Image (cartoon, rainbow, N blue to C red):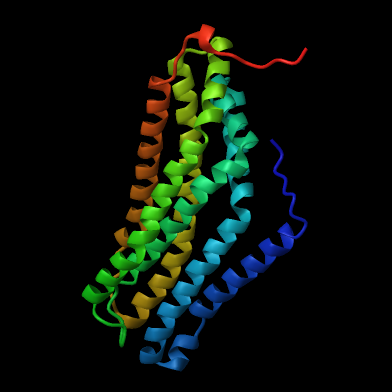
Length: 266
């Protein structure tokens, strides 16, 4: 369960992304807005928040695999501490297929951050247009990425179907019931859904600092639900969607051992 990376420039990328994120936030929270003037900073603030969303997304892409393995390790420790064999199997499978699972949860985490960030930009700023226009623009701008993310999640799960069917039948031969296999799959989904949610909420907290700064300068009201609720709803939706797919797989799997053929080398 060790966290490893085959990219020799991995740590350099992480440091560069961290410096980029810290620089944007520090620049935003400095005394620069007062020196620029409110009207000028009204436009600049939107640009800086957009750059921060991009910078956070790049950091997640770079560290996504490592973050998933860290959470998998945490759940593995819990499973060993309380002797939860199904959870232990789930963490082993995630660790063994981390390259595949990161393609499922990383896009969801990034879309979570985009939705939260842009929904919070509905604050009326000087020269920033009215909130109604920004709402319609946000819906148009984010509808396609959301649909692509959901489609990507479904496609990745379908691509895993053949491998998972083989794995499920192996577990069935070893003595697990179909219900146990479904619960094991649910625990896998729970781990990377939980990982997605924690990453999204952490990044949303960083963005919320920037929005608090805007509301202080422009005497506006910060609508906290705009930055927290989208992440909760999207993470829950992905968990439900993947759970339904997993349930369908278990229901339509033929559990007749006599029909299960495996090539064995002697």
